[in-house]
Image (cartoon, rainbow, N blue to C red):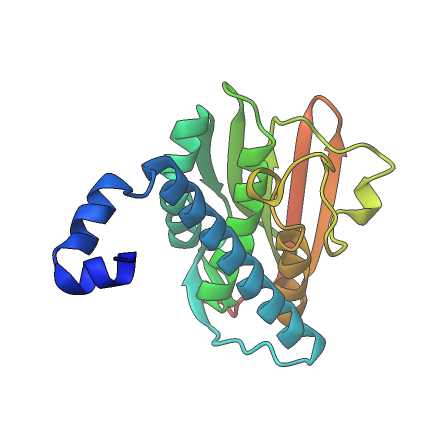
Length: 213
């Protein structure tokens, strides 16, 4: 009698087979992680396709800078604690920003995730907002490994990664920073990076300021 006939003869047999040959929890966890990575890559590619087609849609509203930074920090608190990295915020100047809060959280979140990946235990990542003339400046600064001078001009290039030996799970997809640049450009702003190897990096987002309130 083959396996199919045995199962048809005893409907409870599949459950017993799953008990005997049950999936490895470690394998399931690995497959789940891979699925999440793949979904992030798909979402990133969709955002880049929208940017290329000039189809990124913004829903602007008055956004409080302190609330924006706090929301991003809270979303990454567990990751920061796990990495033993101190994550903090600092806000100066006028409180309001005219922007799409969801897209700005996405851009800042990408920068914070990137900073946490490249900052060793005991380091710091700081989210800051300040006024510079009519512009609002948002910064993510870290005390991480830094970026080599020859690599710095390419950090916003698609699929660029600082450590080529890393997998997409541990080193990112190479799409997060290009998406940051496109999201900020859609707001009429710019994204820049400065870095010193062994000291850390600062990613600066410059946006037009909100009307006075």
